[in-house]
Amino acid sequence: MATNGTTTNGAVDGADAFTVKAGLAQMLKGGVIMDVTTAAEARIAEEAGACAVMALERVPADIRKEGGVARMSDPAMIKEIQEAVTIPVMAKARIGHIVECQILEALGVDYIDESEVLTPADDKYHVQKSDFKAPFVCGCRNLGEALRRIREGAAMIRTKGEAGTGDIVEAVKHIRTVNDEIAKAKAALEGPGGGELALAMMAREIGADFELLKKTAQLGRLPVVNFAAGGVATPADAALMMSLGCDGVFVGSGIFKDATPEHAARRARAIVKATANFTDHQALIEACIEHGSSMKGINNAELKPEEKMAGRGW
Amino acid sequence: MALTVGVLALQGGVIEHLSLLRKAADYLTSTGATQLKSNDFEFIEVRTKEQLSRCDALIIPGGESTTMGIVAARLGLLEPLRQFVKVENKPVWGTCAGLVMLAETASATKQGGQELVGGLDVRVLRNRFGTQIDSFVADLKLPFLGEEETPFRGVFIRAPVVEEIMASQEAAEGVKSKSEDPVEVLATVPAGKAEKAAASEDIVAVRQRNVFGTSFHPELTQDIRIHVWWLKQVLNAGRHQDLVSR
Image (cartoon, rainbow over all chains, first blue to last red):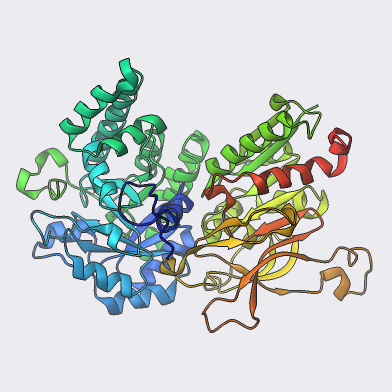
C-alpha cells in the first residue's frame, strides 16, 4: 500500500494505510461486535445486526472457568466463520505473539485483537502493529495505555473491562479514567504557553508519546475509535457504555453464555437495538424485555488479583 | 428559508459526514454560491420517521449495510426511506454501505439476502475487492467536479462496486416515464484482481435522477469538493432552485 511519509498516528506506517485501517473502525461505530465460537453463532450474530464478529475458541467466561492456556483460534474455525458471514470477521491473538498475528493476517482476518483475554505470549513487548497490513484493536485501562497501543500502530481501542465476568464495573472504570485523563490533557493544552510543558510532564507521567497526547488534547477524544468491552452483559450495560462516550460495543460472553441459540439471538438483537438507540428510553425498555435473562456472571470484587485479565499487558 | 440535510444515523460514519457537510456549507456561503446564510443550513442525525420527514435531502453513510438494513427494518424506517427516495424524489447520497442500500439489488449478500432501500437501477457487488487487507486509497478522476480539478483521494474500505446497470422496472414493463433518466456512470477504477471481474473497469460512482452513490468514502478525507458539489445539486433540486445564485 502507498506510504506517504507523513503519518497520522505517530507510527511508522503510511498515512493512507492508517486511514484505511482506522476507517474500518469508523464504519463500525454505533454497532455491536459479538464473540462467536462457531459458524452457526456467527450467523446468529449477523442476523441480529452485529456489525462484525470476533472469532475465538472459547468465550472469556469459559476461558475463566476452564483455565489452561488460551491461544489464537483454530484457522479452520476462522475460515468457516469467514465463509458463513459477509460482515467483518475479527480474531484474537495473544499479546506479543507476532506469528499468531501473521497467521491471522494471512487468513484475511479483517481486524486483529491483540488481547489480554488470551494468555500473554510476551511479558515485555506488545506486537509492533504498524508492521502489519491488517488493522489492530487493543484494550486499555487508561489514556497512557491507549496511546502506547496507538503508537505501536493500533487503529482502534477498546476498554479492557474484565472479560467473562458479566460485571460492567471495570469497563466503566476504564472509560471514565480515559475520559478524565483526556479532560486533564485538554486543560493542560489550554494553559500557559500552549500547555507544552504541562503536556510534556503529563506524557511522561502516563507513559505516552507527547505528539499523540497533544493530538488527543486538541481533539478532545482519542485519535482513533474507542469501543466498550469487558463485562457488557445487558442492553442497559451497552447503552451505559455508549452514554459514557464509547463509539460502539464488544459483547463477549454476554450473548451466548447460559442461553439457547434462540435466546442468544434475542439477546443479540436486544443489544444491537440498545446500542443504536442508547438515548431512547422506550427502545431500551423494549430491548431489556427482548433480552430476557442474562448470563449469571461473576462479581468483579470477588476476583483475586491474579484472576483478573485486565492486568495483562502494560 | 432553510435547508435541512440529514445523515442516517443507525450505525457507521455519521459525524464524519456531518463535519464535512458543515465545512461545505460554510464554503458555499462564503463564496456566494448560494443566497442561503451559513445558519440557514441545518444538518441533523436521522434515527426516526419524524426526523426523516424534516429533511430536504439525506446521506446514507458508510457502515455495515446488513446492520443498517436490519436496524432500519426494526425501527420501521425502510418504507419511509423508500418513500423519501423513490416517491418524493428527494436528493439522496449513499457512500459505501449507503450505495449498497440505494441499489435495487445486491450480490454477495448474507445468506437469505438483505434489506435495501433502492432507488438506483443497479446491482452492486458487496466487498468487491476482498477483505480489509485489500482495502486501499486511490486517486480518482472525477470529471463532474470539473475537468481541471486535481484527482480525488478515494478511500475504499471493504468497498462495493456497481457490477451491472439494469433496465429500470418501468422500462422493463414498457412504461416510458422514467427511462429518460438513465443511470450515469460518474467514476470508475481499473478492475481489481478479483476473479469476479467481468469488465476492465469497476464503476465506483453513479447517479440516477436525484440519487447519487459512491463506493468510496469522501467523509474519511478532509477534501470537501464532493460535499460541495452534492450540496449544490441539492440546492438545484426542487424548491430550493431559487436559492442558487447564477
